[in-house]
Image 1: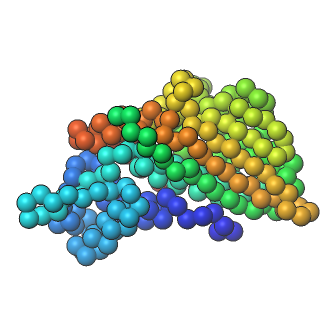
Image 2: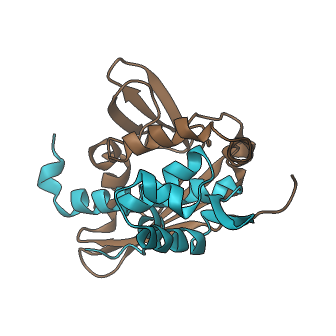
Image 3: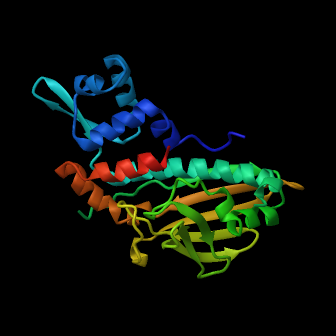
Length: 106
Length: 157
């Protein structure tokens, strides 16, 4: 059933990763600042940030001795990631409905 | 900012265990039965989502309070093989009536043996979504995005 290609779901489907993404939407943060606001360790935050960075949703820059993370200013990528997730869920729902026509009758 | 940022298309592919005619019919006429109810843009809760089954048809939602919000238009209506609709919801989750800002969704239904249909979806021209620039501005300026994200986070529960 799981034939839809993994895309944005992999990036924002994880709740912690989405929480990080949402915190960064409010303002740029360092790893430590993010870890303080979330129930996960700094290494875990770093790992999620790496995935978000590889996915093009987050960028980082050096600010003195620390590294600050922020959403990729090319906002369309972020919007795209969201839409990717929407379609992933929608197609799965469509598949379920199409495969079970009796449930489709309202 | 006239940098030619090309946003990659979104594509998806699934197989359903029904003939193409039926797959097409469920996708279009029964759109409201499967579309995830959380994904809507109106203020009111969504009562139904409608895709009018013809070229030029409207694609919209109706809220529980009777209000209607457009999502896009049907560009190509070729049952049971092909459907193209516009997606005119911008970065602020609002309908943008400007056709120049319309992204497109193409859905193809290909029979793959008796009672099996491959459904391929492509959401393209994403860089036309006007929200891109606006989002960029709010990210660089700080704030702003929060409202959009909260709305979507709520929607995505």
